[in-house]
Length: 438
Figure 1: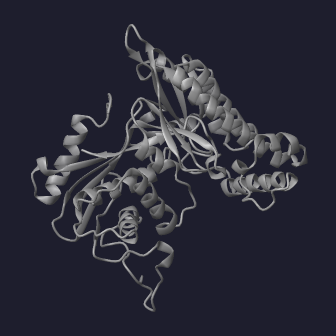
Figure 2 (figure 1 turned 90 degrees about the vertical axis):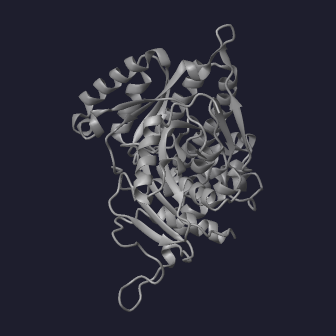
Figure 3 (figure 1 turned 30 degrees about the horizontal axis):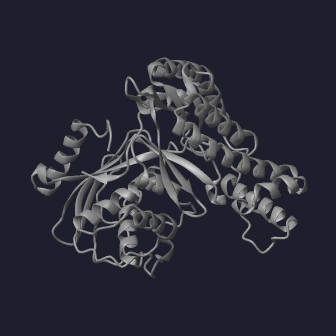
């Protein structure tokens, strides 16, 4: 499993003590789900078009301590949210859009339990829904305490997928269910797409469930095939692996809500599909599903002149980004961090210029990171309308780079910088491992 610095003994003891107090059980009985957040170094905005993407996890994320309840009861408390989630696993869960109000204005079917605020228990209910729908027999509930890394819930690091995966693993562990990662990817998709009605893909949960320390996860979003690309030792004589040579910077913008009011994500997906339709039609393949992964690169080069300027930008981003991903795996496998970093920064620039996403503060943050000392490459984490940017940096210069970024960003955005938790504009992280129960 490699050298993973998270969770620490103190974090585990904190979680175990909370669950022991809740359940009246010995802390040694408490199991803990470790569900990390993910980053996507290369492969921005091409997963919905069936492109190939890269991913890895970091040593921050969700911790869910739990014990089987020995009955059907589910009782969960949170380190971030008020109230207590309570329901029974023998209740049939319904998708949120299937829950209607009755004549008394109350919900038909299970809703938030007493004291439950902001519906933060929906992911636990959604996990039960996914397991029930897939034919799994869930007899035992859990008594648990869930805790996320502070300040990272709106940062574009896939915290929602990490939560969903955590609940799935806890229910499966408590009920002695043997479920492979590919099945759990599908179960988390059911949580997000069907139970909660979110229109997202499977990149996040795939990265969380499939990643391995020291590797870059390669995910073909068209075929759903994946592989792990391991980094070589940077110095065979000293036995220093690539993960010893780099750190990951998370640079926070202070933006919790997107500044843009246009329907950015869905509009861009539609524009990519329209570009694919035109290119396929021009090549006599109009019956093929309009996704850019179904357009051969030769067809794109031959017929891209038929696209209007906006669609041409979207298609250029897809094809250039797909190439960057493939080149990036070669760079990672050969240990060439400098070239890998250049590809990451080029991805960030294409997201701004060709995919036309990102807000002013995030673009400023990207530009600061790109010129910070020791940084190999940087890009948005997500679409860049809120949250943070990521960067790969020489481990020996990580502190210097973090200080530089914090100083420069605070000058440009003093108000936003002051709103960041504990004033920490930059967090220095390491690579992580896959989700697991310990």
